[in-house]
Length: 207
Image (cartoon, rainbow, N blue to C red):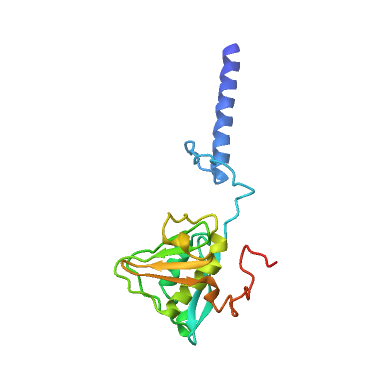
């Protein structure tokens, strides 16, 4: 009797398992091995990402109708005075060239720029660069005057030399065998009367 009961229970269990398998297959779920999932997420996105710094705006001076005229230009670092001077020597871009020209020469190498303790800016031009014309010096002077307040803490100081004997606010430009100087007040776009600024320069306040 006991053997018959056990055999009946085993048959019933097998019948139940077969029925369950049939139901799973009938529901569209294939009987298969376990499918491995992908790797778990490595982490959550930062809810407060650091803001992206916008490019700075610098002022380059090109000639419009023969006069130095301010043209805003995007730059990676407004405090990089050498970078600003390099952009100036590269000349007007396509849009600016429709109304502006330059008398500054194209340079084969980057110029070197430094600022003396009295505020004199020294620009050393490379190679066989010829002396600059008056209008070219005005372009450079105006650009430097406007850029220096932004670069006050980022420009190397000049070593002892001719710059120390110049009046404060002068721009000294030199090549292999020549040197030219121009006071910053010669820039008509910023100092139209030679006395004070016509526009407020970045980082400076009028008294």
